[in-house]
Length: 311
Ligand code: NAP
Image (cartoon, rainbow, N blue to C red; front, side):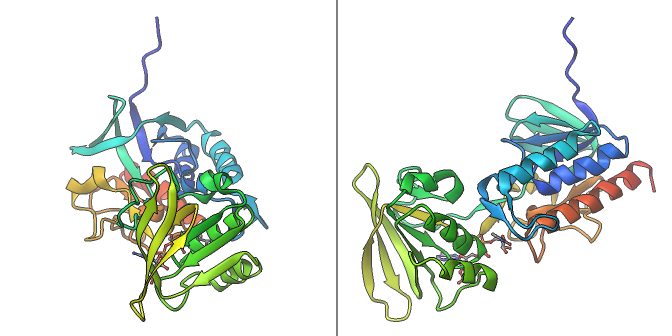
């Protein structure tokens, strides 16, 4: 007889990024039954990051390599991993029910929301039309398609500058278009970018439209935000890094989000719903890094144990 699939756990962690995997490690090491649910491969945004230089213990580590190490750590005490996009989180007394697009409903007394964030879209004409045909939000995934070509990067934060630097190793030229007259990125990332001769920064410039020939991107329309002068730049690809948006749609009805959609927690990672915790990038937090997500995951992993013990 086929073994019945386990659907009841002590803890369900939604999202298997660095925070989620850490919460799963702590909870399973405390002898709790733990399910990590993810809509894709474990690792979250680590899989879209070429190298990480600001995670303690590593001088430099490749994102997917760190994801694999974290996963091996997370499952060593019995935490399970399952594929599924969470569509709804429901509260039924002390139980929480998690429904996925795979038709499964899992139950646990504790849920840890660790769904992270996704790249914000620019919202200009041509962006959706040329998605996957020159418009990208992931240099690590798509950079190789632009070998020896000219690409535009939109944004001035850590992601734009870091990913622009990665692209400079592949593309012939990288133009980073920044809407203000200065970058927001950390100085160390700016310095690394400036060492690449094929990176140019174009300030006070916004992209207003992405143009193509119906097959792929050909150019972007721009405007100078100081002079209001309009322009056009020929390009083979457009990488958009204009911030992030929380992945919190399934949790909208629970009254735990702020007005921008991030999950509100206290310093112990507790939301206002008993037994629901939130950690990492999805949380209302001043810093979104691998290190902070891991720290959040450790706190939640310990606090949920106290919650289940009734302490
Ligand atoms: P971010 O810090 O929010 O920066 C977004 C950038 O996009 C800003 O320069 C912003 O310009 C610009 N922008 C926003 N809307 C725009 C628009 N409509 N048109 C043109 N530009 C626009 O986002 P992020 O760089 O993705 O970083 C997200 C988080 O991850 C941050 O907390 C960051 O520190 C972290 N992160 C860390 C690392 C690392 O430590 N190595 C790497 C990547 C990301 P303004 O400055 O004018 O607002």
